[in-house]
Length: 372
Image (tube, rainbow, N blue to C red):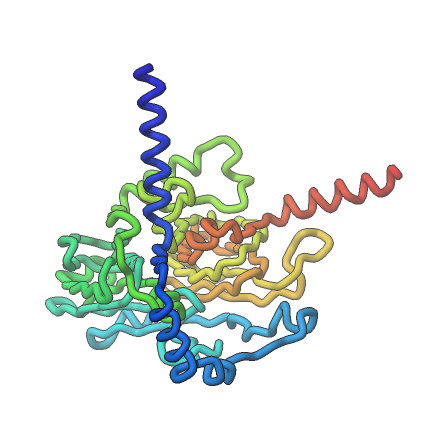
């Protein structure tokens, strides 16, 4: 009896939680006087005619897949964080993709470089649910309402917000080995998504997290020595949060991969519906990405556009484009893409595909057709 009662209580509690999350509806059993008053007010203040001016109607087959301005391939050069005064420089392509009123690197994300001269500080702020910072070079600390994070080259930290503003002040203590006179941070937030929706954060959707350079490198090293690692589509680690166990992503919106590309190696094409904002952490000349909308018969990118990696620079990989990584240098290269794939994964729309799997599926279809 006790077990049955406990199960019943648990079920009722779940049901109560679900019901409490439902929108509230007030029902009024009005009198005749109230009904007459409503009718009178309706005649005086009806907005039907005004609201009708906002309507538009489209024929379905010609409008179901409307033209949207494509996301272009763009880059932000490393000079923005390697030299000059303390500042924040955004990779803002909002006008190029038809967005008005706020900066954006993609419809959902904004990527920026933060340059902080030694002994100086700068405050960043965003109306965003997720803000991630990767330390390209330098040593310092960052402080906001959630605490103080001390950082150095190769570290990454991410924090949520439950208010309209979440200012974070960054201090540079020294530039370590770069001799650039300052620190450089790679900052990505989902501020454009909230601007598009016209909303502000209400609750913290994940826990703040800090990844040290050593922890990241140790985990990549572990993956590198796993059986079959050499033949994987990418050789790296996804950065997760204990608040996002299902999506396995940096936050509920942001996704990040630390990927190593060994010298002389090629990583075969894959594609996904999220936009990738790729930071070339380290790359020698001869390291590049080939991008395109289609694959050829051999499973390589057809009529590709080449984007060369430059250490400390960021480039955009458009959504849905196939892309492969190539390292023709004698040094291994590292890349850190940050995407809005946390959101896409939750929506079941990421649709990541790997060239080898696509080619194998086509071969199975061909074999089946030949057997008929």
